[in-house]
Image (cartoon, rainbow, N blue to C red; front, side):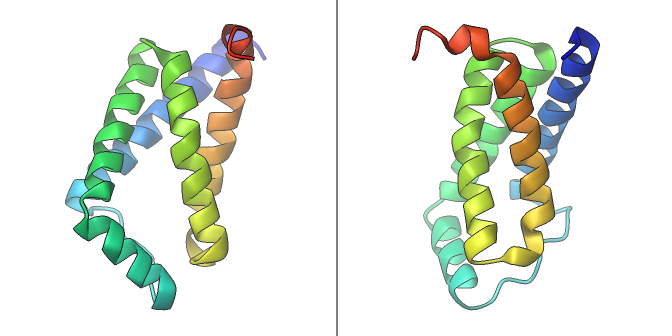
Length: 122
């Protein structure tokens, strides 16, 4: 992948993370209507302040990606959030799969671009 394409993908992922992180506190993006088990699960996460922690983490990761500071580490941490969000939407709320699939794909591309930095972990 060329360096300019990688920079654009990294910036897009960073902006998405900041927007989704801020949305955890302000709810300016409309959420899909949750019902049944998805609503119960999300209510439990919200009442335990876990979603606030996810929001703060997304904002910090987004800023790290935008300013290219600790981006390899931020991308690795973001993968756990991306996979969990993707699995939540596959299992409990398929209507919101597009946003999380986009996040997972962009995260995978950036993670793949940083693969040389992860060789010592493997």
